[in-house]
Length: 415
Image (cartoon, rainbow, N blue to C red; front, side, top):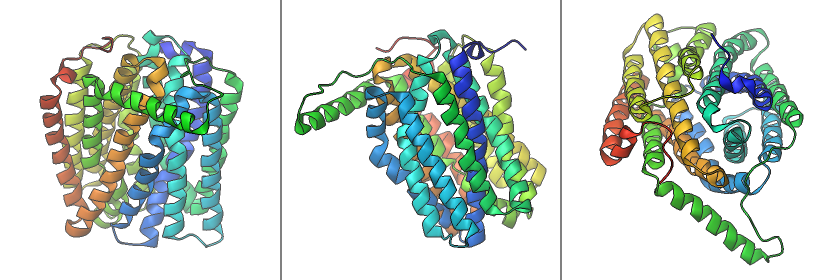
């Protein structure tokens, strides 16, 4: 295997390594949080609260976060947002250790973390094209996906061991420490050049607010007039809305498959095993053709594998279905990110990502609300199966409305 092109650039490697460590800690916390909720209550509707706690701050702050990423230093924004997320993890750990943790605290701290992510994600994704050449972007986003997925393999497995050995609080404290890796990487990278939006420094408050609103509107108008970008965002929203089965995994593990915390750890890591395998293949490619068709095919496979997950009553079949879900999701994520970044000028990149954040964060978070309600009424398996079918149907409707997405080959300039 040759060295992926993205890893030939020192500053990208530093950021990638820091994110890998942080993502492992974040994945430990994510799956531990779901298990923690299941220990606090046996009602599946409780996961709906997590979905709302994540989505509402994103709805409020996402567009502002995108404007910040285009106006201000993306590296400095990440230093602040990563620090805030570290403090949230620390608070969860201390509340759990002292026995003061309640569902309300989990929802509140999740909302604070989501607000930080609203600013972090546009800065983090839009800084990548500033670190390496355009032709290496598919490799870069593949490597980013690998960092996420490797972290998601290691994180859940370690979370099961940590919970069994030390308790829930230890996972939160480990995650708090993991954010230091990204902070250290950002400090080592140094200043990063970007094409910032021009603004009047001497204007009054009313003028500055008006200019900010105009800049946000410009990001919306650009996104809405790019059918390939908009179509990929709508596809992302509905696919993740209907197939947000992750939060129901603890209920499937304990109440359907009847397995313990260590088996749950492996199931939690299964999607990432598939995702890493797919991302490793894509990371070797410099030029990917027929990106639109590959994206749509990945979403359809994602939905069908979700149906299999809901139908399964076997640990090993469930593991296989989750691996397939992860592989399809990885292909979809890499292609979506590549398409949007190539189609967007640097000075609009943060705002485009912030608009996309409403879709690709809102889809799974609102999907958690939907899956929790359906699971409460009809059971977790029914919620997962119906979601997978809805995902396949959504892919068909999107390609009918935006046929340009299906015909997108890769690399075309924005209209």
